[in-house]
Image (cartoon, rainbow, N blue to C red; front, side, top):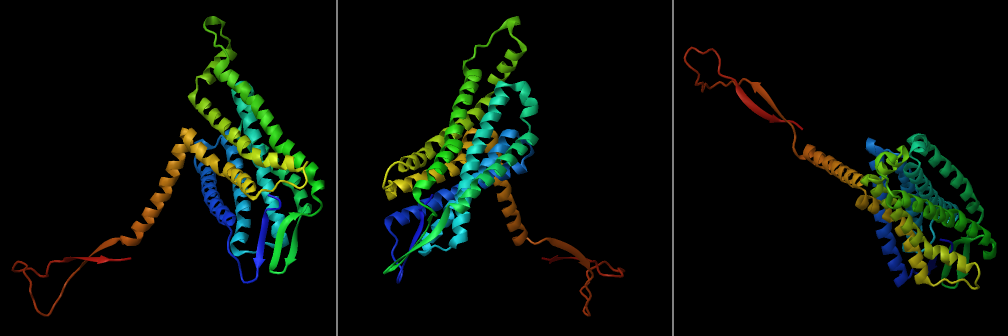
Length: 365
């Protein structure tokens, strides 16, 4: 994202370029869908007791990280609309910090649920005390603490710069020092939060696939207790569907982050750096899409998530209908009172001492 938070303040205002219009529209669409979807993921897990599992705890961590990415990515685009950088020096530091915090926590969360799935499927006995909700929460807390401390360096690596022209001022949120000094930082980021998680995921999901789909299943008395557990796991469509869903999440993470990661590596070796605006836009939209698409995957590939999503939507819709019903349909109360008049129109039988009571309807809001 470095160098992309730029706005031009022109005397008398200026027109949006084609690139700006497309950027704003795509960002609003992708970030809007992603923010709504990730909030739904968090609410579904927190409000549904049976959804609180170790894997789903990691997915909540991933959803919160993606929310941070989408919010921190969307805010700078307001500057494109109003035509000047409105966040100042503090905003430059905080937005950059939050962007990298969300990105790196996403990678660590993917790594964490990959290891959890491997232990749960390939080491089912150990999983009974290793793959627990309480342990998952402690791991998630450790991930957030480590990543928060790691990303503190960005407070010292970025700054705002102003370049004055005859018709305005270009304000950028970018490098504090020369670009060459950032090469170790980007390579460390590439290794820790992209290459290592993907390498671990390829190895562990390969081992999981061998257990679920490849390993021969012996029959008869020769089948050991371990083989029986493996058979039980392999025959579980729920386990297989969840594993497939997580594999899709990892594959999309690899594909959608590849353009940006490749660009950073290539630009570390060439001068001047490759900065085609349309390719940069493509890289940014891939990153935003990676943070926005996961809730859609959960809904399509996990039956439990799909049911929980629909129940949550129905709950919100029911609450709105109940509010409208309470507003337009006031309660009806019934009171009994005796009517009296100087002129008697009593039709009660002869000898009756009082007129019969009348049932009167009165509305009360």
